[in-house]
View 1 (cartoon, protein in one colour):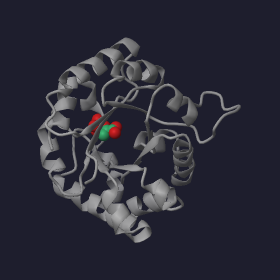
View 2 (cartoon, helix red, strand yellow):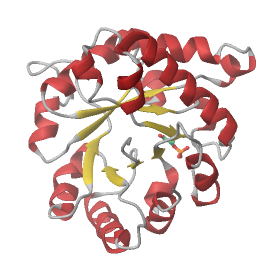
View 3 (cartoon, protein in one colour):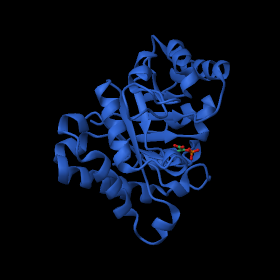
Length: 251
Ligand code: PEP
């Protein structure tokens, strides 16, 4: 059985008080969940510690939105995986399309970040997904396969086992236009096939693959019902506790 995960990427939203309040609202509503889906809250760096303290004693996990490719040193403005771990996070998003686009992060750099995360006991949530022009040109399988192979294929099987993958078509992120359940399933199955070729079918079958891109209470159930979709990485809707919980209740 693969783990079901719903992770909320708060991006550059909320201040520390608002973040703690949002976490408290998620905790309060968690009792309504019908399955043991794992919830991960992913606030800005400045309030990871506060949110981690707020959720301590519950099963809710906390993540960071990025980490440095280095472990320490003269890298002004960067945050090391060890520092993220030390303030109570268990997960880290690596390769979100906004980081690929605005900060020019490429697949090889992301591999180094994944290694840092793993070396410090964090679970990487590795994001992949094609842009609109790549989908329209019919290149989406090739693009995602390249992202996966360049960022993940140098990992050992043991390391790979610790990765969560998020398929996030860039054209669906923050646009209100989600992939159809069929498009999500098609890509998730393809990603699993690519992983199986490299790491074996058993390992591929054990990896949680989340869907991200305008996932909301109204479309989550249809998407999560697909056999290769193991949950979601949620942006906008994760800022509203009711919506986040409704999505987590969509299995
Ligand atoms: C995201 O940024 O990871 C995301 C999926 O955003 P949204 O849900 O707002 O499309």
